[in-house]
Image (cartoon, rainbow over all chains, first blue to last red; front, side, top):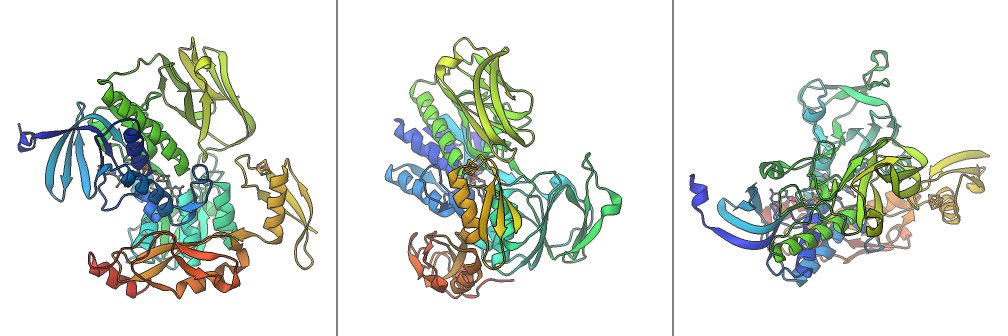
Length: 419
Length: 140
Ligand SMILES: Cc1cc2nc3c(=O)[nH]c(=O)nc-3n(C[C@H](O)[C@H](O)[C@H](O)COP(=O)(O)OP(=O)(O)OC[C@H]3O[C@@H](n4cnc5c(N)ncnc54)[C@H](O)[C@@H]3O)c2cc1C
Ligand code: SF4
């Protein structure tokens, strides 16, 4: 027995880990669904998560029918949380989580142990780095993830460079292309290895086209050059196997390279608790109550799967919070999982991966490649259960598909495909 | 006469819209093609004739517990005015405290919009170091 285990555990009903939009919505819903003992733990000194650095507008179009900036969107939820007198612990990090829902948390070095009836995981994502995509070359300064540059500029007032190249056409990179241009930097180009952009069309138009910033598809960075500070990069077109084509290589001078090459859910705690992880989403496997494979542990928001719209993060997290409260209040009753859900042709992932069949549900899914005028089709052992026709299907845009409870009766294994 | 292609951003259908533009002087929409609804057509016309954008930036805050307050325009402004409005925003320094929604500028560069704060900044003391940093403006 080590010293830590001797610290007496306090008991809480619902503990929410992470104070971003997911954690905020989950905590609010848990309280609104009758749980009076909710604790929200956030490692940063302020609530709001990644929204604090997203100062551009476009948040809340679905929820508030207004185009808010990130901090304004977060503020609406923080006010509501305060109004409900929900206890929060800022500057507090959750260090570990056990399968029987004991959390070890630390506030400036002081350790606490908390035993919870239900835990909602809402830790968000971190960005993929150069290491994760392995670009050869030197290690000069001037290479940042787009989100780190966003944090420096919008929260620390530090301009990271003057001549900028961006690898990856994810939304954060596109937003930063505009932001840096408006602050006087020159953005040379955005390079994307895929044959299509991974950002929203709206961002391509308003962040690149508006400022004549070129987007090169099927192109990647092959080398990083510079001694102390970045001096430039080599880029090359890629073939259909995504390998660089040598004779297309060219030099692009720049003092800054931003990487916008994807997000990875922060699931260290989740793994430690023994929760089953979906290899495609890198998030937990959940049922239609957002409960993971470990009873009483729930997951929502970007830690569950990467979202493109914060509105859906809030919607999903509110459900997770409500079910966590229900679980804690019902003497920890779990629903039986009677229906499995798997991705079929053309679908990269679908979530939740299991259903109880006793309530209506919304499937969240992403397609593998762009399509026009196709349908998302849900079948049960070959029989069609639901169908949604869409003008446009794009891997960058999460698709939501509602299934009524009646449609689920008699189902046992659903497959979701593009038809 | 020239053709310009857009992806409509009004709804998730993302129709491709081809606009034939009579661009001798000021561009005027001659014809819109693609499987487009009325809203998309209006949007495309606006995009060609006078595109409007909401913009966001930050301004320095003195005497606050945070060096910056983020700001945005309350209404979209003409694309061609963005640089002028940014220049006006750059001149501003606020004194803490700042509340979300505080009006920072009225009709910047003659545009029909206000610029409002989108983040609250409390008064000083807690972190004097950060406040001092704000006075130095954008560091390189
Ligand atoms: C860098 C970056 C920029 C983004 N920019 C945009 C954008 O411009 N527009 C857009 O629509 N979407 C953007 N997104 C997507 C955005 O993250 C989601 O829409 C939304 O913020 C996800 O909410 P969340 O609550 O799941 O995660 P987050 O907002 O990431 O919140 C997670 C919170 O959990 C806390 N946390 C993590 N681990 C622990 C722990 N062990 N203990 C305690 N607290 C912990 C973190 O500090 C954080 O506050 C961005 C994402 C990233 C990573
Ligand atoms: S044209 Fe109409 S249907 Fe097509 S994307 Fe625009 S708003 Fe949607």
